[in-house]
Every structure is written in C-alpha cells, then in structure tokens.
Image (cartoon, rainbow, N blue to C red; front, side):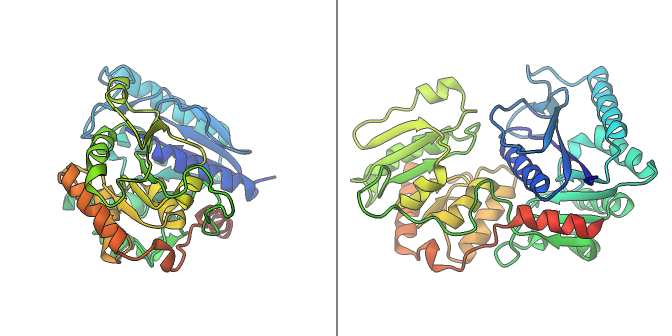
Length: 384
C-alpha cells in the first residue's frame, strides 16, 4: 500500500503557490505516494495533477494586495462561522485520510493568517496514532520583514510539531538563511531539494534550429497570473522605443488573473503582440533575446533555466519582500538586471534592459538544480 500524503496549500493573490504545490503533488504521485492536495484558495482550472487527488476547501483569498487580511471570494470578511466550517472540513478530511505524511505549504514560515486552521490541523495530526510525519514545504526565500516576535513564534511552532522543513531551492544561488533570521534553530532539520519546476527543465531549452520559428529574437514580457502585473506591461510598452531592442517584437503575455479593465487598457501596435499567457512559455523564453518578468518563484526558475538574458521587476511592498529578495540575490551574482520595487518607470526599465544586454548570458552560468520534485519524493521516503 502506498504511503499517503496530505498536502495543504493556500494561494492568496496569484496562483504561484498552487502551481508549485500541484507540481510537487504530481512528482510525489509519480514517486509512488498516494497524494491528496488540499487547496484553500480560489478554484483554478487546468491544474496538472497527474495521479494526485484534489480537494477544494471553502475558498478564501487576500482582501487586497497588502495580504494583511483575508476575505471570501466576493470580498466579504471572514466570520466565525466560515472559519469554523473550514476547520471542521479540514480536520474531518485529515481523520478520513489518516496520512503517513502531513505537508503544510509555507507554514509556519509564512501563511500565518491561517493559524486559525493550521494550528488545529497540527494538533490533530500530533495526536493521531500512528502519528504522521509533519513536514513544512517552503520556497527559496520567505518574508524578511517578519518581526523578531513572528520569527520566534515560527521557530516555536516548528520545534513543537515538525519533523523537517524541505527548502525548494538551490543553495548555490539562494540560501534560506538570508531571509529567515531563525535559521540556526531549524537548520538541523532542514533539507534542500533543488527548485521545483512545473516543466521538465532538467536540460536547458535551446532555440529551434533551421527555419526561423515564431518568437525568435523576441522580447518576452510576462507577469505570471497577472493579478498585479499591469504596471509592468504598461511600462514595457513605453520603454520599448527607448531600448536597443526597439526593432524586435515585444510579446506581452497577459495572465488570467489580470482584471478585464486593465487588460483592455493595453494598446499594442506595430512590433507588439499582446496575448494570453501561453503553455509554451519556456519555449518562448529559449528563443527570445530577452525576458522581462516579475520575480515570482515559478517564473524565475523557468527564466534561469531557459532564457538568454533577463530583467526582473519584482512585486513588493514593505510587508512583502520575497520577490525583491529573490531578484536581489540573483543580481548579486551578476545573473540578471533588476528594477527594484517602487522604481518601475519606462526609463528605469529601459536602463535595466541595457544592463541585461551588456551583462553575461544566463547560459554562461552552471545550470541550477531544478530537480526538486523527484528529490522531494526521495527525501520523504527516507523520512518514513
């Protein structure tokens, strides 16, 4: 009988967390586990889950871009009845599944607004007989702006409940200690898996040879799900004539979560293609002269593995530092050019394009470790 994995994930604004969790669930299923992915965010169509199973909790989201408060999908605040229903559904599901492994995505190093359901989930799992192994699944960086009190709370919860934390990163590029101040307290139970990539990036993609294919030499501008991507797309349209790539096709990929009004306000023209985000994104990157994107986890990995040169324009606020830190660490290594949060304008973006073109190709660096899915399956088997 296959070992059972209960994997809790919550996306709040974009869909990157859910995409990575689905990729990981698929890899675990391929590795022989019986996986249930439990999602608490807005329903998303087209998730590639492979043999993994899926359960949708009553959905919630971030009330706004600050991510400080949670709401229902219609914007209504969460009340006690909604919270209680979520907790009951989650605990009933845990008992029915009786998993061998419980995985929480980001918690306790993030997603602390979900303590109302995750702490009862952990307590229930700890009380089970036999008790499942409890694992935290985290990205390469976490919110550096967390207060010392919040860091101490995260460490206390980790020490009380968790067997291990799996860090889905390549430590040669991004070290978890750079963003999490409590590293010394958790490092004995921390394991790096390599990046978890949605597509097969085990070998760098190469541009099609022979006839000139669609997208060759383009500038690809992408914004992931697009929920907060409109400013970058508008800046790219105005930056284009200011760059040495003004004669190239600029291909703007509009994410599915971009509001319709912002999508309608985008005006192209000769040499500009505006289209929906595409499933062949990595192929476009491999053929492009330059990638311009935000610095979300999934997009950044695909850029590192497939693109020639890149500009990262991280989304960030005083509270949300993840994308900015990821971009800054890669810029320190000379791999990308960056427009820091709050600095985006047509001129600053055009300047970053120039710096990216003057710098080394990403293909001149050693390939990053993007084998995190299979490696996670191997590490969980070892944990059992």
